[in-house]
Amino acid sequence: MTDSSRPSKCTVNSAAPSPHRVVPLTPPPKICNTILDHIGNTPMVRLSNIMAAEGLQCELLAKCEYFNAGGSVKDRIGKRMVEDAEISGRLQQGHTVIEPTSGNTGIGLALACAIKGYRAIITLPEKMSQEKVNVLRALGAEIVRTPTEAAWDAPESHIGVAMRLNKEIPNSHILNQYTNPGNPLAHYDGTAEEIYNQCDGKLDVIVMGAGTGGTVTGIARKLKERIPNVKVVGVDPVGSILAEPESLNVNANQPYAVEGIGYDFIPTVLDRTLVDRWIKTTDKESLLMARRLIREEGLLCGGSSGTAVVAALQVAKELGPGQRCVVLLPDSTRNYMTKFLNDDWMIERGFMERQTEDPLGNATI
Ligand code: PMP
Image (cartoon, rainbow, N blue to C red; front, side, top):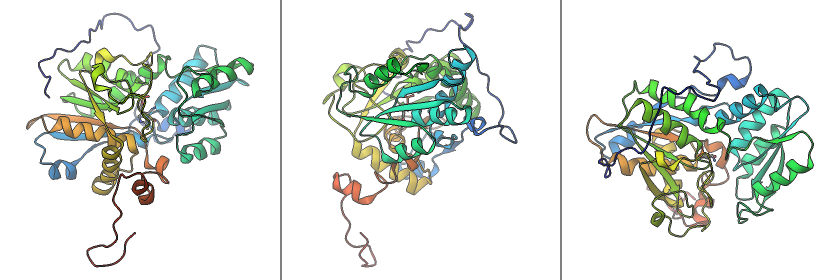
């Protein structure tokens, strides 16, 4: 890494008792009580073909979060936030869960609510895919679409509408992934422990995209406690303002196609002091990389996984033999079947060229 001389800004007092519920790792059960038991314990996969094609000297590993029950890393926080609210007595039978989300948190929450019998209302910007909406509806969630261009603090934004519904509906709760400590804690207790164990504590760099920042914050905090020299790289799409230094965020608030990462405000749960370096990415490179992960590694991941791997390759090329870089793949290609997986969708947006002939002379597209 270029900034390897930069000390970690994280300070840790591991002697202090946690004010939060600690959820220890449990081995996967032979028979799940419900599918909520199939959240966590996701595979770590060596990107062997891409390592060879790129001539990498270091090892590049992918934490495949799309194997969670609902198809994304956000199932972890859906389960955690619902169970924390149940344990505290806040959430009770007959109550309603409302959440503003880019979709995957909604799916994780709706999954937990479907199994546990709560009403779920999800507010979701128009940009997010129809595939996510269909899954949410199938899980019994009620959906309110909101204008993508609304600023986060506008009354018509997904956050603003959720707040209005919360006032109108008795016994409703916004568990609020932007401020809920259960969001980073799901990754501090779960995802990070798994990564540490799967790597036997040997990892040099971890690369992750940020939406709410819960994933980055929880994983970075735990790994920095355990591996003081580990470097954390955050990835942020052009159009978002999460990256530091501020000068990286050119074209702030320009629209972008990759879903689930980037924001026009800094969520409370994102602790940017834990991030050693930010890398900005474009839609085109992200979506082409997601297709490459599918084609070359058979990893059926989503667009933000492509984003993370674009940055991971940049970092991995700066690492040497014996070093190891881990990249987190947040969701599944299931969410984007009519989007980046579709050639016409890619071509219409200028992300791909139309191919008229294949090497055998047959028309292909
Ligand atoms: N990728 C996708 C597809 C997501 O839905 C999310 C969650 N918004 C993320 C990445 C980022 O996760 P986090 O909110 O924990 O930063």
